[in-house]
Length: 248
View 1 (tube, one colour):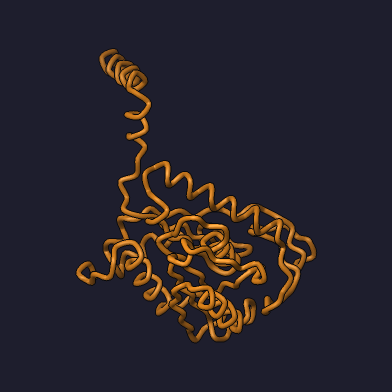
View 2 (tube, one colour):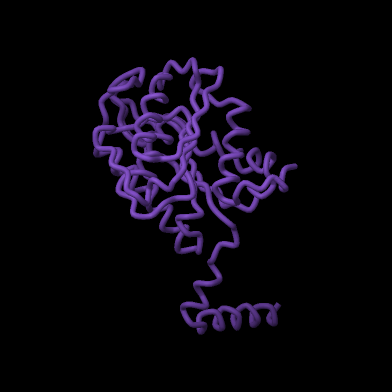
């Protein structure tokens, strides 16, 4: 037992004596890319963590991706009478139609939260060009904002599922951000984030020079097996190119 303790002590001392750069190397990620995926209003990361299993079932290379599922803060939601729940920003109109009022301060705060996760990944050796930001509903709205607002460097891609474009009057996509491809999936019968939001948002991004893949599915405000397959195809293409040799 004493020998084990001595070994552990010496190992700790040796690590502390290493140059800072060498110590930093030990925390570097071995993954080839990353997906930051944000849940929707009232949900938690547990609602989407299965993506770590389901997406690689379509493309095995996606098992070599670091998956990050941030948790939204607990905030008061106006449409729910001020009741508190997990949410990225406040909502004032229901359902969410084109032209619904935006909570700009809340949006900016949430966007910074995601930028913090991006910076942590960059410090671990995964560059922005190998990071896809995505989300469902409210989470998708924040992913769109993060990818295309004030970005000086492109992400590998952006995914919006049943999402909507917030503060559209301020959309000004930089030349760098135009290089971030977008996948937008939406339910044709969505009664919460109304289906016309997809056509409106996709149109705005196309006008701005963004490459958009938009798909619709016979569903409400939820996910669909075909959507998950399309999501996996898009993610694999963004991070690894268009090769098909990895399919299971």
